[in-house]
Image 1: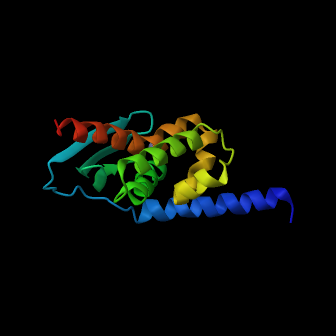
Image 2: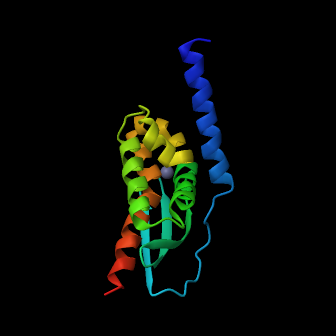
Length: 159
Ligand code: ZN
């Protein structure tokens, strides 16, 4: 098998992962939380028309809940679904690692990351091809930006 057909088979698999997440997005539907530290962020990507409102609930340093509502392209909706899967239930340090790795993936211009970071990202690795299209990076990053901002808001309430 040539390198070319290998890479297109991989791209097709990645495409499938993104479509599956877009179709059955995880964490969709804002959850009412009874926690002392709740943060919310609303992000809009005007160039594509994507919109995400995301809510985070912290229990100490644990990301106890991540829920969201939104609309837009498959990439934006799938990306926040993957984010939900990766960070809910993790501690904030682990969530930060995932955020850093995903940002690196988006800045890699379509090149794969090292195995450690790919393991960390799981399904989010499927977005590697998006890094080749600067206009779509905004779509993929939208939910992650909302999460980062909501986390800051949630921490503010602590004081
Ligand atoms: Zn979009």
